[in-house]
Image 1 (cartoon, rainbow, N blue to C red):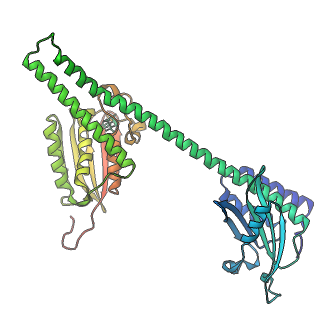
Image 2: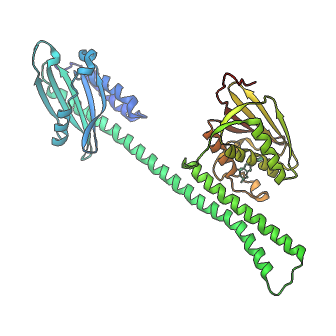
Image 3: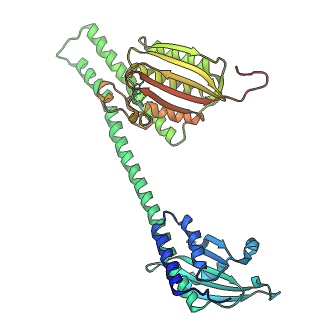
Amino acid sequence: MGDRTVSGDALLAIIFEISRQVAEADDASSVLPVLVSLTRRMVVFDNLIIYLPDENELQPYFARAVGRGRSKEAELPWGTEIAEKIYFQNKTSAFHEEIGEPKEDRVNARMYLGTPLRQGNKKIGVLVLIRFGSPAYSDKDISRLEYVAENVAHLLERERLVSTIEKVEGSQRMWKMQENFVATVSHDLRTPLGFIKGYTTTLLREDTEWDVPTYREFLGIIDDEADRLQALIDNLLDSSRLQSGTLPMKFQRVELDVLLRDMIQRTQLGDFNLKVQFDIKDPGMEVNADPMRMGQVFDNLLSNASKYAPGSTVCVTLSREGGWAQVLVADDGPGIEEEHLEKIFQRFYRIPETKLAQRGSGLGLYICRQIINAHQGEIHAESTEGEGTTFRITLPLAEETPDKKLS
Ligand code: ADP
């Protein structure tokens, strides 16, 4: 067994196919196996290994056993020492190794051929071929392997560049988000602060006497705005803790209908105009939940309905769907256009048209989704424009215990 004899035309076709594969590759992992079989059509080898530097060591990045030794793959040599030699000498080299008896077993006569992978003057790794049994690699094998190595180096370098670009784009996006964050937050903090400052300064003017009802009215506004500021700061803190995964959740087994009834009553106490119809289709369902955080979700959905669908009767429906509890919170307000239905769960997202009419920070639904996800559940919005919006929440039911069967 010597050079792989291929006709000039066939060789050209292989070479052409190698460069086409590399040019059109989306990712190295899918093309490298193709390159292995193309290479094998022009150079005989049993193992092919690509080593890449990782800190101070070369590590195998890709390895294939294709020859007859394949069945013994686990015991085969992979030429690590030789790869290191080639990497440090930075030139193509062939080595031959006889390792003991029986000599007839071709796995004991090993021919190594390795070449550095380079991009310009930079070494980026080593490509090693191993063949069991003679003869040694020829000059033709060497130049064919060097051609393959050049292409592999292109492929790997391109992959590295793509991942670097993705990282840069990712950090640019982060930077942009942080910039937007600062802009939005400072705007949202300034608005209530502006009211508080304005009304306080007005009340403190020495050139004007205010009657008691005016005093009370202005103090009422200051009080509301201070509450708003407090809620905004709480939301900001929650949202950044949720994003970094540091918002502690205290899970316990809770009956969802009890939790919801409680929540609805509390929200109605703070908003006399809120009309809610609560329909429990399947009572007694238990979930593992943090009652305070879960309450926050429903409080937010109910106050949104009151803000964005004023005058609606909000229908809250609790039912069981297989191993899940489902809660629907439906209003009959103006609805939400399809294009916004997923975006409203993004941090700071507000539907542009609602911006002027109602105050808000775009954090509420983001927080709701993070909390629901932390409970292994899902929340989505559905809407028919002009007919209202329905928020659908699904939560996994807590394991049933033998003495307490769910409905
Ligand atoms: P915020 O209320 O502070 O703006 P949210 O995250 O709670 O933030 O809501 C995001 C956006 O989704 C709101 O600005 C509003 O445009 C829209 N929205 C939320 N709930 C409803 C609803 N029930 N009906 C119509 N639009 C809604």
